[in-house]
Image (cartoon, rainbow, N blue to C red; front, side, top):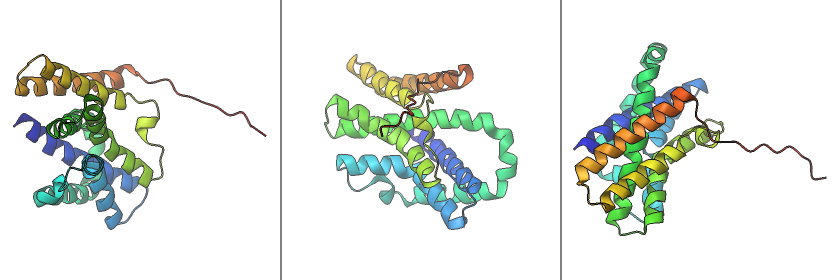
Length: 205
């Protein structure tokens, strides 16, 4: 139940972040809807395609489509006021990252995949929506720019699997993993923790 609530909050927030990114690129309303959709649901779609998990999740829940599209279009009306909610969106985005990662893990576990695949499935679900958003908006994906984002997804997946292995009850494992992911992501933002980047400019000719 907790994960379901967090999931719906997360896809709403991710759809709105996608719509804002589209607005920064002066896209039309169709572009806004597309970017909102792929940001919110793209990670889960890629995961299902990679794992062979059919039918794809959102195709069985049309209410999810209505929610995502509505959130994207609503953003076009209230965008100028959303700067005041920046901190809230950071929290919701961090919650979404943790929730998406856990959902991806659980799908792979239910399909009896090996642990490395389970973790990758969680990470794909957690980060690929944002990657698609940034690529479609002609930006270097934030997850590749030193932000402690993919590492948080990895940590959430590993923690969840570790707790499950130790026999911790599923609801408790989910709650601990979501909170840990949220705290780690917010600490990374607050303290400015980043991954080292690689810069190479030498010519080969």
